[in-house]
Length: 364
Image (cartoon, rainbow, N blue to C red; front, side, top):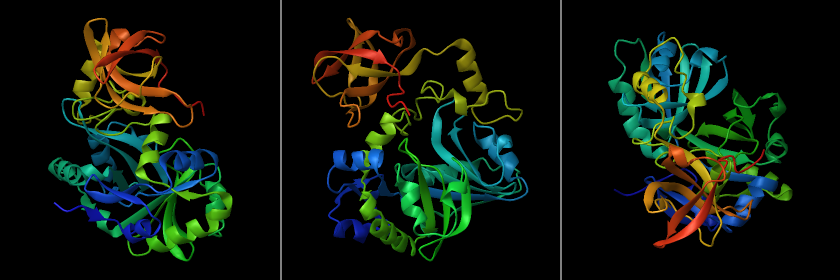
């Protein structure tokens, strides 16, 4: 199957982006280089094309009740124009996907899902529609999205709108905002651990937004940023990536994300029983952070040992551009997750010493 192109594909090529196939989409992995782009986001600002993400609308008088049944987090706490992070789980507690829910009102919600999971998620939602009075619509092809992230994100984006962006609180949204003459939805969300905004517009108008932001942001150090630093940034900020820290086989509890699984919410939800049992019985494995003491960069899938016993594997590993250390996340035996515990990471078939540290690599 040929990879799809986002509406911004030609812009990436013009900017010299190194294009790769990611989750069935042609996207830039980097422009100038991963570290430069990573540092721009941490210190000034960077802009990402995230038009490959999926958007699914849920509307109708039972929209709230349906989503409470479908998702692990508690939507009863949401006010209109608020955003929440949550998981969609299988009955056994494994993760269908992790996603953001945008509440427009009690009968209208937008779900933003991972690009690789759009079709699977949509089918899962339809298959679990039951008798709820709702309409579920996959609108992914109609929407383009860019993320402007970093300490100067608000200053830069503010130059393109009369709307006071400081009035949008963290994890809130505003619809019908004029950005450079384009009608957009903006949310104060992102995947980098920095302040910033995700800007949604129609597929045919997102190019204008991209160009204008690059134009006004240049003087403040904004750079176009690729998938490479998107991963290093989210990893430093302890944000999970589907298929790594959480997956069909790894529950949100094992990933360390119990905060987003409300086992005590009144309504039943898919996976609630299995996750409740897992929590009551005690986890046998858990996600932990680690730092390499010896030499070598840990990579996804590398095995982890304690003495002769294999105790787990690396879910994500990098030389951290911000901390200048070789660090990683690993899913390991829960008895080995104590801070300061020393383990061996098999790097190119050789054991390299590592120390268990907090997953919160970045103190923000």
